[in-house]
Length: 223
Image (cartoon, rainbow, N blue to C red; front, side, top):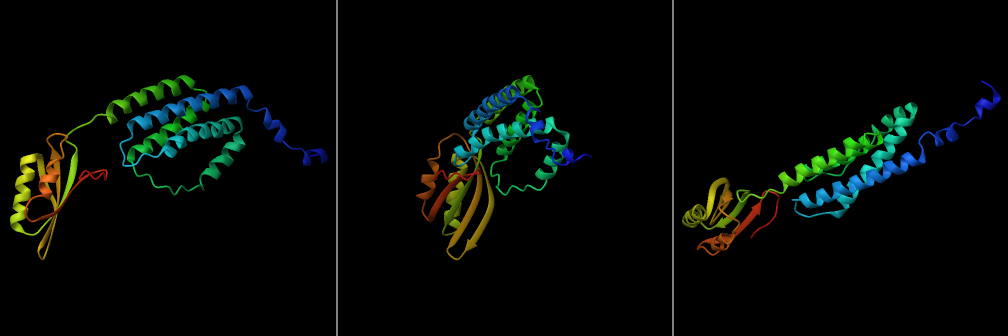
């Protein structure tokens, strides 16, 4: 090793390891596919409260993954360092919807495939995945389960509630029952016959019923 080798830097040598044209094309495709993922997420969202920031995160995650993989594929030493750096990263944000995990993994996978140069796989794979999600997630069913929370004052009012539910619902199952002095609380799983939820108003007006609440399994209050 000579004196010049000690102060020699390889930074400038890495500047040309990835061409600007390849970077621009990869980022443009990543933005386009990330935007497509965002639109599919917006169309298939079924949660309680829609957050546009998560959709923007999907676009940014696709582009960031593309940049990272472009750097990794151009330098073996950098790839080892990148693996070590990412192994100590911990994400604390809780994922409330199971489908959100699929969108996050989809964004990361598209970024990896694009940076690897497999553009047809990224494009056609994303179109196919998006079509599958649009078909299956957007299917609406009137047989979705709901929870009815009833507070009544005794056995007679409980019998009236059960009779009303059997008349207006397709299926009714008691999930839990809490009995206190002069008050009974029922949690019942039901399946609606149709999209009409007016029967919850009838329940609330029954003699001896203090309150009636209809809650979907994703937490939306229906009455």
